[in-house]
Image (cartoon, rainbow, N blue to C red; front, side, top):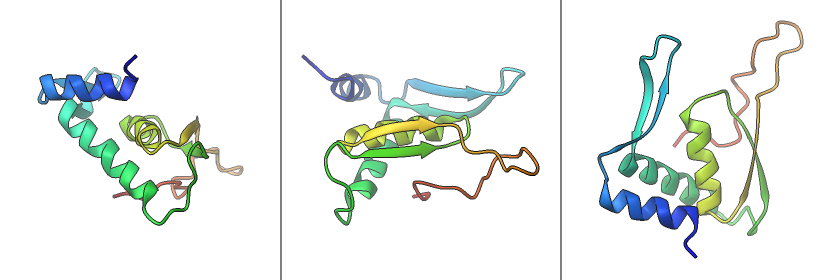
Length: 110
């Protein structure tokens, strides 16, 4: 039985330039978009970054505290590619203002 990553890679080979994900604003305008090929490249880059240095063991859990958007989905699939268990959560709110803490990063930008 093929995994979801196997299916994603197969579809990426068949339709590399086809739109896979689009994050839209309230008016329906795209903010971010990924084709199959660009999404697969991004998830593989994240997986490679996670595996570099040997800081994680297979099936370690990794907390993903991201605001809504496609980067969280990329990080989720990157964890899965690396053999880690992604645990997505909403970012914490700053206690005084109710604003998100945008300086909280689990995975640095690549």
